[in-house]
Length: 288
Ligand code: SAM
Image (cartoon, rainbow, N blue to C red; front, side):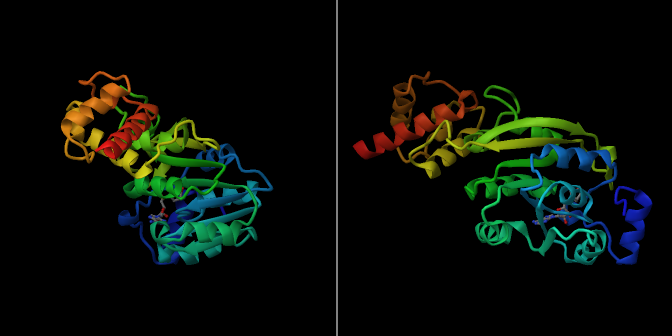
C-alpha cells in the first residue's frame, strides 16, 4: 500500500474515522523519496533493530521494515493503531506499541525487545516535543548505534551550530556532550500532509563510545549550561550569579582559573570549557 499517495492517506483516514491530530504534531510524509532516504541513511542493516518514535500511518515504518531485522514503533495516538495494523500487515518484523514515548520505560523496552542486537533510532519527530524526546533518549545512556531524526530546520541548525554561531544554545551544548551531530539533508514543507509552516531537515547523532569530555558532576554541568544560555546577553559571571552555588567572586575566580576572560559570555564556550568550569566550581565548593 503506497502511503505517500495523498488519495490513499485520505481514504485510510476516512475508513478509520480519524483526523490529523495537531496536538500530536501529525504531519505525514507524502513524498516517497523522503522516507526511503531517511531509512537508507539511518545506518541499520538486515541484522539490526530500529526503534521508531511516532510511526503515524506507517510511511517511514514500511521503509524501515524493508531494511532492518526488527522494528519497534511507539505511537501515542490510539486512533492510529488499527490503521498501522492494516498498513503494516505484510511485515512480520514489526511491533507497534501504543504509548507516549515520554512515559515509556525505554530501558525496559530496550532489554525486552532488542536483546543483544545493535539498535538504531529513526523518527520523523513530532515538533512540539523534539528536544524532550532527544534528551530522554540521550540521557537514557542506552547504547544506540545512531539516531536519525527529522526535525524542524531551525532546530537542526541549532543542533549543528558551533560556539559563537547565533544558533548555538543550551540544547546544542547538551546534545554535543553525548555525540556528534550532523545534518544529512533538508526537506521542504511541501513534502508533508498537512503541510507545516516551516521546513524540516534530517539530522544524525552518532553517540560517542568514549566521550571526549566528562564532567565530574553532570547535573551541575547541565544546569550551568542552561543558566548560561537563559541570559545569553549577560556575561557568564552575571548569568551564573545565584545559580552556581558559589559567590559571584568565586564564579569569576573559577572562570579565570580555567584560563578564560572574566568578561566572557556563555555563548563562546564549547562543552569542553563548560565541563572544565563545572569541575572548577566543584573544586571551589569543596574548599569553602
Ligand atoms: N512517521 C510518520 C511520517 O513520517 O509520516 C509520522 C510522523 S508525525 C511528524 C509524528 C508522529 O509522532 C505522529 O504519528 C504522532 O501521533 C506521534 N507522536 C506524537 N507525540 C508522541 C509521543 N509523545 N510518543 C509517541 N508518539 C508520538
